[in-house]
Length: 271
Image 1 (cartoon, helix red, strand yellow):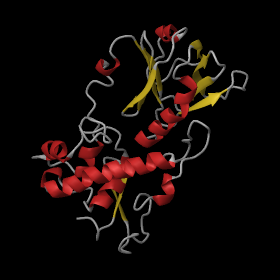
Image 2 (tube, rainbow, N blue to C red):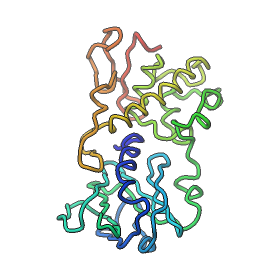
Image 3 (cartoon, helix red, strand yellow):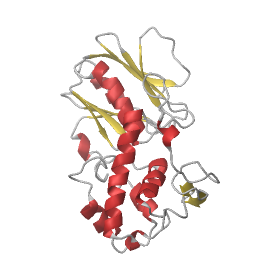
């Protein structure tokens, strides 16, 4: 599943082709995505995209009249194409700019989204209750995380993966950040000290930023906007390394299942 770094990488990739451009045409080839593509999405036609942004895993392309919300779902991707390029089977949505660039949403499993929002995008039900961005030091910091962990018996991994606590910390990045902070993923959140939570905040920020700089993590069928894989998976410390030696202490990396997700950790480095 594309996570925050993959979505951020995709946004940065398409921005030069869409921001400041007028949308000539909107094409809906299959409206049956996670939520039906609304007819109002054609209101984007004739509009100039003023700004591109990301909120959690959502890409927002804003014009004077509204905002296009895009989500990549489980296996989706955005690609910059020419209008005469042959369509792929799972290219479900696209828009064409006046300069002849076409942005296509490719989504084999159809868990993605293409929605049009005329009012304040941040007030939309999909966005309004999201937690802070993990890369924002103003909103996501140790005081904030410590407050959200107080009295919690839920595992710390579950807390940081909850989008109401903080957005975009998916399974891979949660495992990696917890390893970097030396915290077992199944430790009760309320029992993690403030000093260790401070390390976790920095680890989350570091692992996400490193992945963005390397182009995202490629798992199965995710590719970036040019169809190229990301490379962060080459530096993973514990994720998907069951029974392999820890890169720090040589102990054997273990795997447990938490909330139906594989969770990897080093029993010696993490406590």
